[in-house]
Amino acid sequence: MSDLPLHPDTVAVHAGRGDFAALGVHAAPIDLSSTNPLPDILHGGDSYESMATGGHPLPEGGNVYARLWNPTVARFEEALAELEHAEAAVAFSSGMAATTAAILSHTTAAGKHHVVAVRPLYGGTDHLLDSGLLGAEVTFCHEAEVGASLREDTGLIVLETPANPTLDLVDIAAVVAQAQGVPVMVDNTFATPLLQNPLDLGAAMSLHSATKYIGGHGDVIAGVIACSEETARALRSVRAITGALLHPLGAYLLHRGLATLPVRMQAQQAAAHELALRLQQNAAVAEVFYPGFDDARGIVGGQMRGGGAMVSIRLAGGYAAAEALTGAVRLFTHAVSLGGVDSLLQHPAALTHRPVAPEARPGADIVRLSIGLENVEDLAADLEQALARAASVAAMA
Ligand code: PLP
Image (cartoon, rainbow, N blue to C red; front, side, top):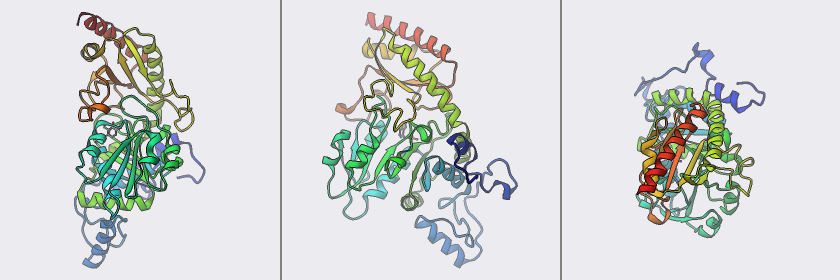
């Protein structure tokens, strides 16, 4: 790539393509090898050792085995790292596999068994932490309580901003300032690297469910963490041992998805902002959650370069209206997940946040909308007719 500083739009198109000219290709080659021929025992073994301990393959020893290294995955990781202003990135088979690796790599060392987690979080992340499955003890808290929640054995601080599903904003730098050197992991799924770069604010890791905006087309499940090379070594080592690797076909699609991420995000964000404004005027909607609407701290425009493309609403008619809305939409698909080119809507309390402890679960009157690339007037018309239906159903309930 060019030595000149490049705009993220350009980085998104060109990153991770540095070896294409030498290979004589224009599209990323997909290496599907599960294993690789070894030059000899000595060099193959040295390369194996390097990768099993989180390093790169040694040129004279090769990639050895795809659970350790895959060039198609590595190109996607390189591109994502560049967009996140990070030294490295490590890709996983899902966002949850990435979160698992981050927790394991920071809480299994002697004397480090505690995690501080800022709620709200994606329901799966909350559930994983709360379950104790990975052996870590967890203190859930508000962002202002992070410093007070730290213990001698705290190995990791976890936060999400904007947070799922009410789009609460967390001041990343303010949490880092309380962290006393404990690594902070930010789930950056909703913002994407185009709107927010947590490492620039002192976070140690920026995690994405790449299933969402990075893939952008609803056809890949994946996770990725941008971080320092030192942290990447620890994460790769967990990935190699636990086998939570990303398949190269998925990595190919994600790398391709990055090229259109800036234009997708800009268009989806513009539509989401417009719809959020109109939803505020709709009598069937008691409250609209959209980053920036109630942001006295100026996080949108500061830490985050825009409000993003997610909108949540509280229905005036409560759960009955929420249920009716999910059945009444015609253009929106009633489905979990988010960040794709087509608009989705779902009921977090019943679905994505079902495993969350009752005191932290979102209200039954909340519906979350992921705004896609359809024409904004068509989306507005669909919501208007569906909300009218939902209001009349709720009135009869
Ligand atoms: N983080 C956030 C903010 C999410 O919304 C999700 C999934 O919905 C995840 C993490 C988990 O990602 P995945 O479903 O790819 O495992």
